[in-house]
Image 1 (cartoon, one colour):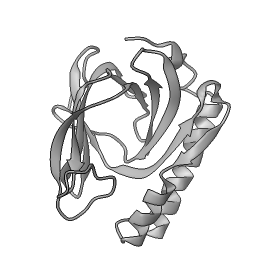
Image 2: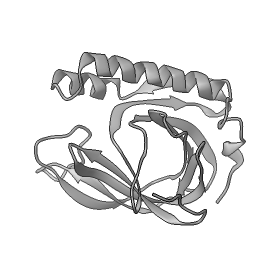
Image 3: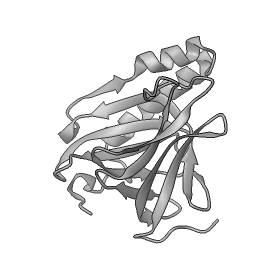
Length: 185
């Protein structure tokens, strides 16, 4: 499939077991062999998985439906093709850079309308200025393993990918050597 042009609207489809789990739109900033960068403005329409109770699900259940919602913050996504993560620069609703978010996930798979991927539940939050970082949602990854959705070996590989991603970001290796925190739509 061909690459998307800067300014083009695309879909980011998170899938679980072949079904859409979450869907949001983004605007392509750059789409090349070494980098895919996109921006999702605050309050963009999105679809999220909800259970029978109508509550948003964090971990898949046998049955779920999609519910319309909106995103909160603006998010600049930076993905290196082949990587098992994306690095997100999160901007508050005022447009001010807030923090880095490393989303551990499968490599982005190109589709006709954008990209799809599988989330790996564990994430990393890195403070501005790269001062400190912490794991996010360790309990979710543990529950996914407990339920048999991921093997302990896959969970260990996901954690190792997170450690590599943090080291890469903290060292400001490409593409994180660019001043993404200063980027504005």
